Image (cartoon, rainbow, N blue to C red; front, side, top):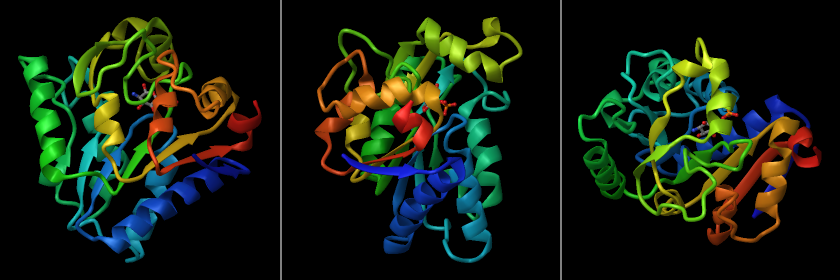
Length: 240
Ligand code: GLP
């Protein structure tokens, strides 16, 4: 794993945005794998600025998002579809019909996962997959467990993730208890992966991932199987 340690959140966001921008310049019709959560918001802001300045063009880009709560409607301001519209898609020249997020209100969530896996296969490997990391080491919504799923699947959220994400909802009881998420294999299908982390709360998860062992209690450790992963974190996340 390559490691970029940044002074602060702003520097981390700029480093991540530059890697995404380079991929877009190299291939204007590229696929981007995108993530939600508070961590990548600064990176999205920088990408919006670059798009407005005419430095990058989203018109030919396809995006595939990692995950979505279940059940949740795309109009719910806590859905990841809503998040993506608010934090990126509504502010850049992207064709929204080429932006994919798992269907949080599918009548048959397992079938929706299969369909999503097919979409990811059809659009082709992401030039860059952006990831955040949960305090418990989750990526997407692949939670620590004795075994991890390979493909897009329905998953229950752990108590710790529900607690961590409750800050975005009116109350903890409002956090959906399930999600649809790309599996570890889906994520590892990207050509390049960048994983972002800031703040001391992420230190334990980052340290565990950087041990270089495959440990299902830290799903992010599975990224050690990939040949092109760049960890971009601030000093607080790296040093604790
Ligand atoms: C969420 C998402 C992840 C995200 C992580 C960290 O639950 N499913 O994709 O990386 O938790 O979130 P944050 O960046 O807000 O700390």
